[in-house]
Length: 144
Image 1 (cartoon, one colour):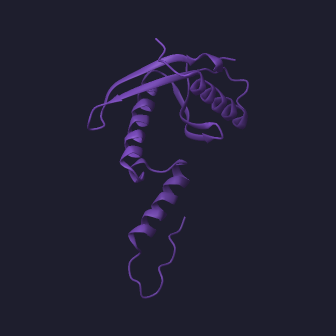
Image 2 (cartoon, rainbow, N blue to C red):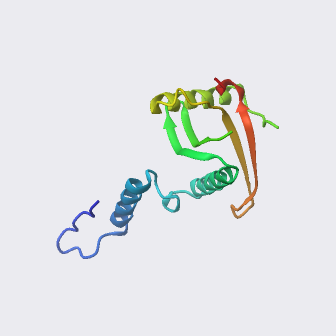
């Protein structure tokens, strides 16, 4: 990727053009936006919790297949493979199951065994993970 040429007489590139270039390079290399360039404090906190959950899952022996996948049914933050249930509404379960089915179909993973586990991350007031819980097979409808 190349940074766009700055117009003559303007001097250095603006902060916005440099950040835009950096975002596009990061996207090309890693397939996602860098967490440290996420725009709002709430998004940065969410990204931090997702990274903590992914680290925890890897330590538990899970293989992270993809992160932050958007479907027409919603976003799946972490898609992982590996082998007490929290309260989920039926509507949320349906959305998660539909999103998982769409991802599986889109990526050609129909023959893989699958289930939807739920990861809860509890953060302290500074955004540091205090506790991480994994609920295996949290969404029963996704076991096919």
